[in-house]
Image 1 (cartoon, one colour):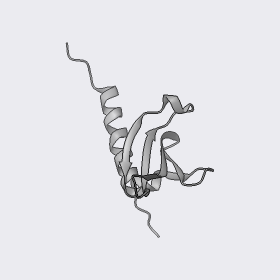
Image 2 (cartoon, rainbow, N blue to C red):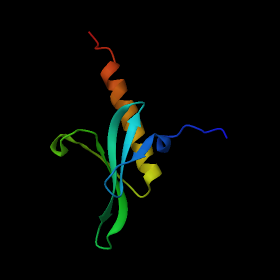
Image 3 (tube, one colour):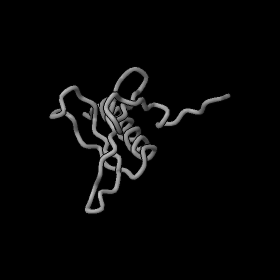
Image 4 (cartoon, rainbow, N blue to C red):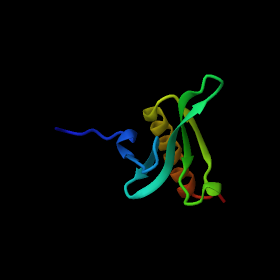
Length: 90
């Protein structure tokens, strides 16, 4: 069976319940957790940048599905990589 690449294929389940790590090859780039949001406590997926210490993590955003959260994380990751390698104009 041929597997197609997608941002969701870069997720691995963490030990904690309702938690996933997102990777770019062997680099952890984000943590996605299912969390209850709002008055009705609807489940949403909260994505933050990866850092060992929680105070060093930055909120990426919320999404209604895990696959949408993975898409958002991947797009932000690509943008951040692009910002790091753009030449400085003189």
